[in-house]
Length: 438
Figure (cartoon, rainbow, N blue to C red):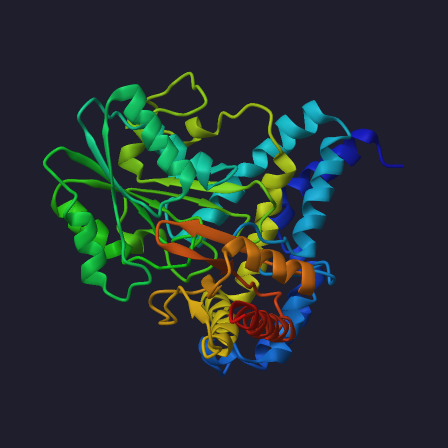
């Protein structure tokens, strides 16, 4: 008969391996079927594979999305695959068998293999990766942790995410720094123009440039590497908001050339809701003050940023299964599929009278997100019409000169759903034109 100690030992061993073992939930649920499906398209380029509906039908079955709603706001937060949900539930059940013991002595130890898994995906040293709750927490930690003094200047853009803009404005109020926001002519396919916008705002007092890799409002991809190279040539550091690029686009963080990077993992990586990652170049960790207090705030150990107190260890461990799921598809194949889905609906609606796209369809400048508007309708009106009449969920965008709804498919999105969306835009546009002409 098995003793309680033996049961606990086996449970510990299984838990610590979890998503990082051959017995991962992903391997149990999908490995054989996905391998068979992949073999049929391995001869295709990622762009060609993006159009193989038989393959993507296999992927789509891995989600448990509500069939009564067509969710096209995956840029906000994406649903997790079933295996990721199961992982969170599994670890949550374990934690509640004895929270103090299983959380702190077992699940807390599982962050190290997760750190290595994330680092491998990001192409960086594990000692540069901190696991936290979202891009806001990651980037605010850096923004509020930098030693900036009165008169130091920071350059960002008017299209950066509000939580980051607010963090800089808080530093203006608290420390007297100078915060300059450049404008951008969106959509843009002009690298030189975008780089010049940031360069023209840099002065001898500029210490930091903040760049959003993929602008969340309309999906514009910025030439981050060129902006970083320009800023570094002037002795200026760069922080990159990768909330809408990591887990979507096929890149490694060092490819960008930045000094700091933050992202949410519950967007295109489809990790559990409320998970994020921060990257700081190794030699710069020491100078960044942690946001939640640390006993050694000037430590060179990236773990000083993870002293959050009690938090959801099950969510952290669910990230591992999300990475397995992502790698099971392949970064480039996934990127091309989501871009294909965006182009699929966008090319259908762009020819409709009174309909306007607010995003370039050039693959260099957009991937998943695209903005669309109908003449005579506010974003709120179009958002409401799509949901009330077609049960299609998008989000209205109104910022600077941009007025549209943001549409974002994901790998589980079907062509049937996008056909329905395109028909809805056609019908709404025709009705708006008829109403407007009276």
